Amino acid sequence: MIRFFNTLSGRVEDFVPLRPGEVSLYTCGPTVYSPQHIGNMRAYVFEDLLKRFLIFSGFRVRHVMNITDVDDKTIQGAHAEGVSLQDYTRKYIDAFFADLEALNIRPADHYPRATDHIPEMVAIIKGLLEKGLAYRKDGSIYYSIAKFPAYGRLSKIRADDLRPGQRVEADEYEKESVRDFALWKAPKPGEPVWETELGPGRPGWHIECSAMSAKYLGPTFDIHCGGVDNIFPHHENEIAQSEAYWGRPFVRTWLHCQHLVRDGEKMAKSKGNITTISQLVAAGVDKLTIRYLLLSTHYRKTLNFTPETLSQARAARERLLDFVLALEGIPPRRPAAPGLSDHLAEARRGFTEALGDDLNIAEALAALFEFIRKINTLTAAEALGADDARRILDFLGELDTVLGVLPSKKEDLLPEEVQKKIAAREEARRAGDFRRADEIRAELLRAGIKLEDTKDGVRWKRVTKDGPAP
Ligand SMILES: [Zn+2]
Image 1: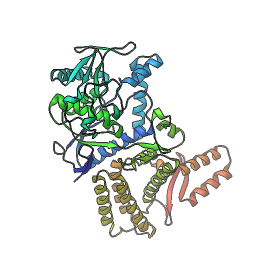
Image 2 (image 1 turned 90 degrees about the horizontal axis):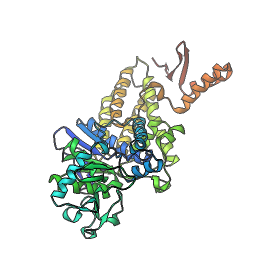
Image 3 (image 1 turned 120 degrees about the vertical axis):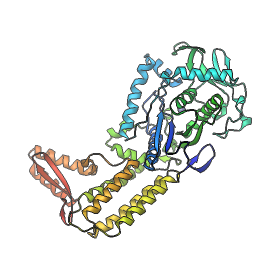
Image 4 (image 1 turned 180 degrees about the horizontal axis):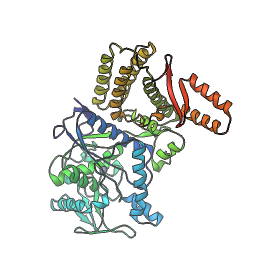
């Protein structure tokens, strides 16, 4: 049984999807007004872990992530640069997809854009006006939160904090501004305008997720994710819009990811303390090490981004890669180890049960590293055969469908330091400095990496006490 902490109930609950074997998942996507920073990307990595684990557990997952390409920030950004909204957002949409790929995040089934779904939003707003839940004021349309008694259930805002009839115009606002929020905004000079049945204007931010989730997943679906910042006002407002319009429960399980902090402060563009994926990659950090770092802290805990936590992530991942390399080097004729099936079953159980317990990644990784420790003992005692190694590698491949931290190319299994040394030796050879080249080769051999120069270039093998790998 899989269990998740549901923000709505405030409890850990058994997860039962609406339709057996199928999970409908909506995750709030980026507002494309700047490059995403690693704090933003943490939420997408968490959602990817969730999705991969559900697939690993046998579910078919239908995943929708919206792209917010019209809101206060994108409009201001386009205005400041003097370009169209479309031209302005395009480069950040492209950068976002490049970041997803860098972090080995599996694509969603749909990435609907707000500007492509104006008619769907207009239909809901019209319905809310007809039901008396929305009202017009100075060309804009607002949601009347006093008419929706369940308002505040997700964010636990107390009903007596509500100030009926007071309005807030901005897309994002603080809890102190619990007021009627804008569904449709009156035209303003310099802002994009859509001519619709509601009159001219543009949508507020919150309505897009109510419209696009229903279009692709139906009015009621299984899981909705986002960062903790989304709980209020964004997700509270989504519930109010969707449940009032369709008259049914909106989302069964809400999962929210905590912040990433740097020097004790939340990473945010407004604080000027952001780091992007491309900055880290330019500084020589492996993309999958970044993924490991963002993945390895439980999603409901604050993730501390420091040089130390980054190097811990690098070390942990290199232990994993080194383990794979050593297995690749087991000589062929050794007999099979007794008890391997037990170790495999125990590791599988530990990994699966931990993730099934509200995605307890720390325990899942602990189960994996405990397994590695046991296998390393067998390897050191020369008690592991090549067939065993193959079984273990297949098992790791299976776990990695969830973790996504192993490289797809064999040479990327080598630690960065070793890769650099191989490159330095090549450089020395090209320069005719064969003494230096031989020195590096000897150094690598002492570290267990044997280089061979073939007509197709340099090849390497992991060597064990028994000699070279097959
Ligand atoms: Zn959203």
